[in-house]
Length: 269
Image 1 (cartoon, one colour):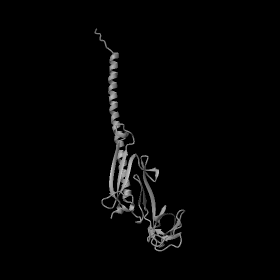
Image 2 (spheres, rainbow, N blue to C red):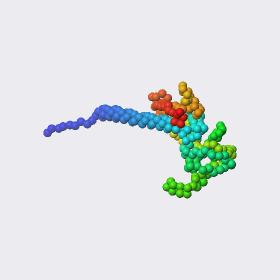
Image 3 (tube, rainbow, N blue to C red):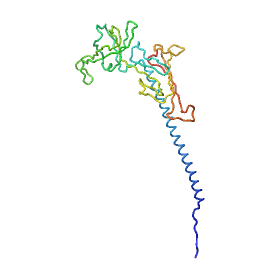
Image 4 (spheres, helix red, strand yellow):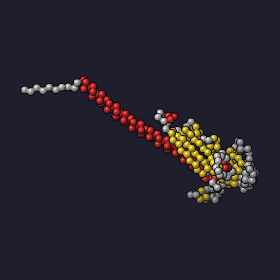
């Protein structure tokens, strides 16, 4: 009869196995951790680039269209500082020229389409035969004489709006040749890392370090100007960063910047 003996795992062998396994697991963990970090950084960089590019495209579209559907006497762009501008727009296309002097300060006038003046906070008045230009706060009510069915005015009536000066309007009477147009005033500015529209809570783009808006003259050699009358080109510079810090980069963030120079369409001569 043959007797065989079996030997178990010694304590030393068990400890060696545990140590080797720990090394392998730790290496795998660090490997996958590095992959995860690379994916996270890559996502942040993509978001940063898209954010800066969106801000640049949006602002350039708005600025390049400034002055459209406005009377030529309206200063469509007001420069507050290098990172803040106010743009006057007439998105509803409401424009009317008075054919005669008005007898009173409150009156009803016919217009092609009353919808062009809906919710207009201001009316711009340009006195045709003098240098008077002013922005008046106006209360507008609508007297729609027409009855429209599928775009056809069955009553053959005329759209009309009634204007009444609000407090601060000064009770001014319109004169022959005066031009009015319905306007919105919109401010774009950089504050606390955000490009805002009229209010700090209305954010166009976030994580923006720097916004620089410059305007160039129409006369060669071109120089910088803040006057709407001499603007023809705009120059935009936007620098953005990632939302999370990266200690390996100067300043703690990964940053990128874009710049563009473009014409203001209504100012091209």
